[in-house]
Image (cartoon, rainbow, N blue to C red; front, side, top):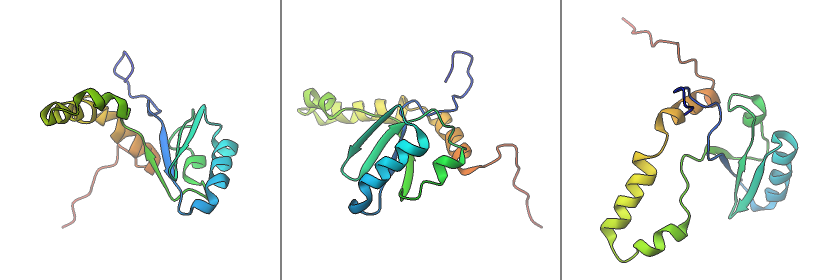
Length: 129
């Protein structure tokens, strides 16, 4: 969130995409480079992690042909951060809760989801009958 309380148009941790077949992994990698001009792109076990300045509502995001599913990375915690905590289960759980529950930008995530899905936040559900 910006200093004025506005919701950012882009997730701070970026996106990740899953690919349906390992055989098209390189094709998907190249498609993301070509269509989304990512600032970062990393490939790990059938997933492509990337950042781009393109809005989640842009058709380029939704029209990737080689991507099976697209996700927003809400929070990221390197595995190395858990190593000192491995001796105490309660510390691990508290750390996970802090990083992935308390500190995650949930309000912004809902807005990014709306942008991606094309949901108009001003629409109201009409009660039938």
